[in-house]
Image 1: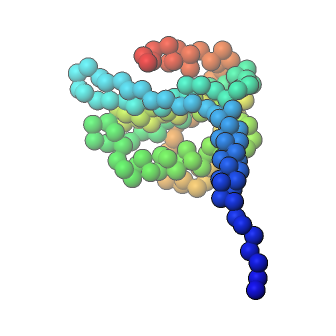
Image 2: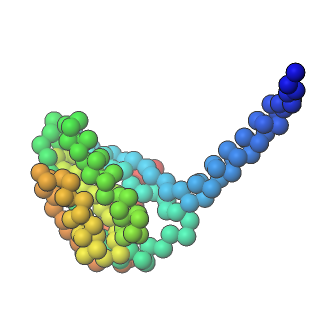
Length: 169
């Protein structure tokens, strides 16, 4: 007759909890914290929704990203907001571009605003040219998309700091 060893469920669960706590600690040590804010137009009740980077990863060096890049997607939507299909396309563009930027350490997304028939992504990049090259690679998958691209020097992150100063928490 085969023998069975006793399974110690309490010890097993303790080991799992230890592993889970280690897995939880590691990502949080370098987590980015995002927040949202809204702005409502006084006369027409249109809203602009902002998603912005509230806190950076530990050790993040903003001096490595002196160029501000703005991508603008113009659309026509109900009360200035995109349709569901348009939002799906916008999310797909962002989700396709971000891993390429992260992999090559090219840029950091700092603010996304949606409303008034415009979606804007604001990044800080190592260089506007390297960002544009990565964007061009991604846009091959989005042949029917027309984005406006702007790049300018902002080594002090003035535009980002100015936005954050206007947010009421």
